Image: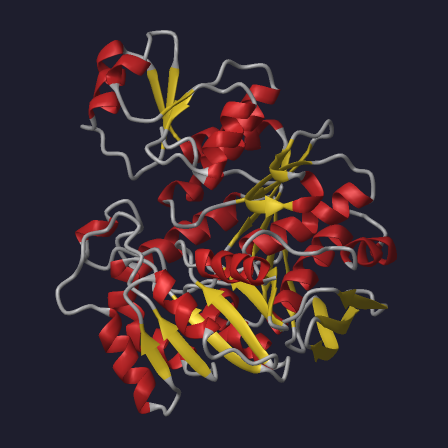
Amino acid sequence: MGIGGIGMSALAKWHLQEGHQVSGCDTADSQSVQQLRSLGIPVHSSHNPDHLTDKMTLIKNRAVPANEPEAKHATKLGILVKHRIELLGDLFQRFNAIAVTGSHGKSTTTGMIATIFCQLGLDPSVLIGADLQDIGGNMRFGRSTTLVAEVDESDPGFSLLDSHLAVLTNLENDHVADGFSERRTYHATFNDLLDATEKFASRAKNLLFCSDWPLLKSLFGQTCTASTFGTTSDATYRISELNLLPEASRFNLVLPEGNIQQVCLSIPGQHNALNAAAALAVAHLSGLDISASADALSQFKGVGRRWQHWGTIEGAPIIDDYAHHPTEIMATLNTAQLTGRRVRAVIQPHRWVRTALHWPAIADAASIADEVFLVDIYGAGELAIPGISPEIIRDRVALTGTPIEYHSSLESVVSSIASTLDPNDLIITLGAGDVWKVAELLVNQERYDQ
């Protein structure tokens, strides 16, 4: 159920490749669903108990309630019903799993590790929550015993995964219900998320975490088997001489034995330097040649919807990014400011509960841009919360002096940007919803005008 989702579709393709009969349903006719159909997977456009037979296993995510008619019928038929995270756990039992989780940077770090392992000929299997050009999508079916997998920390079930190496990029108060019933499938409280993270880490044979995050150090700093990466002086894999450039970054990675490896990335941002340090630490802990690993990483071009270049309009670059949490928005806009261009950010708040909990921080992060175009909250199925609206973000941003416009449609944003363009602009769309369509519309307008 929900087979078109980024995580579910990867597992569907995996099991098809392994020789299983796979079918599914999804109410959205997305590109992902169309790709699954092109692979020969039947995908129904609605949920219906008639889809099921007593010889099936039903896979669903936690957002699907037990009393949903299709799920309820599965129970009546007596067939096995599993959550998506449990299916991932089954694969972890069969492989040496390198499991990447955290509040931010999971997809990019997973993609970097996968790129290194593929380039060095290790033939890994890969499951990732974004499209990775190097593997042609979000899944790679390898022939080795290594599985590189992104793990969704929003699902409380991740605490039960058994990994060979657990990688924690960071940890913040996100994917927490915090009293809102709309997030009943998430962790009830931040302490519950902390407990689940500790259980996940304790079940891993080896642990790697970012020393730049005091919370992680407080949780795992005394773990004798843990390694760390980051910019702090006590990091096992320490970043030094960091040089942030508009479209790249350079740094030295000081290894545990004291050797220094120069690293050149073709993607920008301090957050990506940290992601790269994590990936190289994984390579080193796995016994790979660190110089060859750094060379492989220099060819990494990013994953889908993370600093993704769409093209230009009248000389102004158009970039789309998945950033939707205040920390991510801040990191991405700080990176954008490195270009020296006028940063014009189109921001789409994601989910009503996240906006309710973090709207002041979202506004403060948005103010880093030179100009903000704010659009409606992308609910992602959540019900609107009284008193929460784009206007409260707009008003707080306006107090900082950063110019801001609110638009009720994406088309209106496109018109406003297109009518006031300067070649020195940088247009960046930010959000986990459909705000990327602004980038697409602007690029198509440029082609049409030509």
